[in-house]
Amino acid sequence: MERWFITMKKADFNGIAEKYHISPILARLIRNRDILGDDAVELYLNGTIADLSDGMLMKDMDRAVEILAEKIREEKPVRIIGDYDIDGVNATYILQQGLSGLGADVDTDIPDRIRDGYGLNIDLIDRAVRDGIDTIITCDNGIAAAEEIAYGKDHGLTIIVTDHHKVPYTEMNGERKYILPRADAVVDPHQPDCPYPFKGLCGAAVAYKLVEALYNVMQQDPEDVDYLMENVAIATVGDVMDLTGENRIFVKQGLEMLRRTRNPGLKALIECTGIDAERLNAYHIGFILGPCINASGRLDTAKRALELLNARTRRDAVMLAEDLKALNDSRKEMTERGVEEAVQMIETTSLKEDKVLVVYLPDCHESIAGIIAGRIRERYYRPAFVLTRAEDGVKGSGRSIETYDMFAQMCMCRALFTKFGGHKLAAGLSLKEENVERFRRTINELCNLSEEDLLEKVSIDMLLPFPYITEGLVEELELLEPFGKGNQRPLFAGKDLRVISPRIFGKNRSVLKCRLKDSQGNQMDAVYFGDVEDCLREMERKQVMSFTYYPSVNEYMGRRTVQVTIVNYQ
Image 1: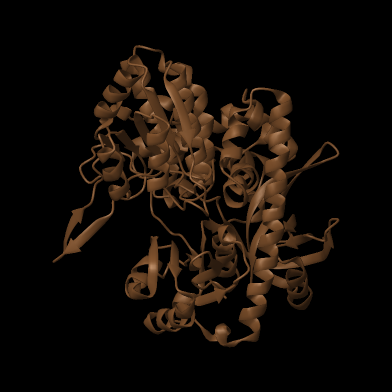
Image 2: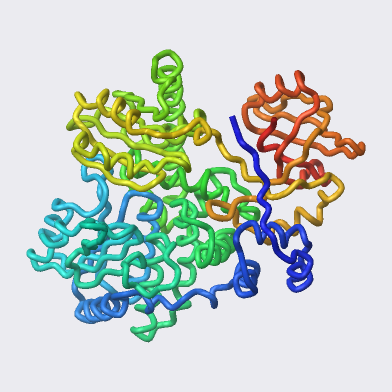
């Protein structure tokens, strides 16, 4: 079940519209996204690279840059240690390109998801010492690796941390004590005393800021590394950062670069996944390119994805791109099987009564547990954990709903875990197999979600009558892009609409088409891509319904018509 509500934020919409030469509809949508005041509206609509803050404002950035400039001059071997996801791989590539462009002796290492687990570990440090490395730079990890970094320092390494994760802390009598690693420099905007104004950057963006600052200090033109902004955009969308403030500028700019990218690997990946490069947008990164890059870290080694970014020849690029696509296709099949098994288990056992779903799929590949948990959460709109059998016990991932702080609830039964971490909406854990059932019972006993909390909230921007839906409006809505987390695509609604001739199309029967007619007799073409069979049954049964939708232009055989894409129906 869903609860629909209309966002009713007040402002002088006509005044805003006049000032920025936009329609009052657009002015209302901008206000609904909490963009307040002239500066914020100006930045939202017209922000450019010139509006990004100087990376030198970050705490320790001056130290990091000074150390690296010296190491480059002394020709000391530097190793970049990234993470195995889309953000870590792109951050690694950005640092590698940036440093080698300055003549550094630099190489990379990325942990293996299953063998090494997340972030820096003792093996990676031993390997660096054995290889005669002088300096390690971490990216997209390191802020929580205090012990490992202390070990590296004791072995004579210089260590620079660049990260974007929150700083771990302990709390005593309501006072937080932050645990910072003993690195030579720690660059992370989340440090409590870091003056950098925008805190929401991904790991690749922090890496980019470092490279840019280093080029300035070494008197090289920072514009030489502008092209790496496309990697920042891929990482920002792929790591699901809020598309607000600086992230919005990075993604807008990066998408423009990506549409005409000179990187052979990215070009090949765009081609082999069938994306029209001219029209590439944030959706394509989030749902097509991103999963291919992530698949290598899930099912193979993330080094394959880094190889793709580094590919020099068209032949290598095409081969690697096809490899990643094939890996992602098999990841998709494994996910579908896992979701089916989980649903079967929920529907046929007492799990169905639980408010927090804990599903144990021993034979599921541990790297896709989080994706399956996300799909289960979407289907049942409840917090969901998916557990799998690992080398030493059971590992799992959780995905939550807005009204449930998953990490806080897990802290209350931490004694059951051998390891756990996360935040409000997602978490990871390890535990002994004999504790699986106890965990399921305990997390449900602790749960105080009401029936109301378990209703999915659908936030509608405004009721939009059909006569307002024009090609001009669709074009104007593009000013709000890129859409994603923190900047959702506008959602409109219409009530009491009559459904005319609904039918299912497509080779997989995956598209529903119909016409919608309002009480004044205005008609509009509509399409729906969700559970089409279910929607068709409802339409045939009710005939007059309410819908949420967004407008788009359908191009077919050279003819352009305005239509709406249905998102929810009641």
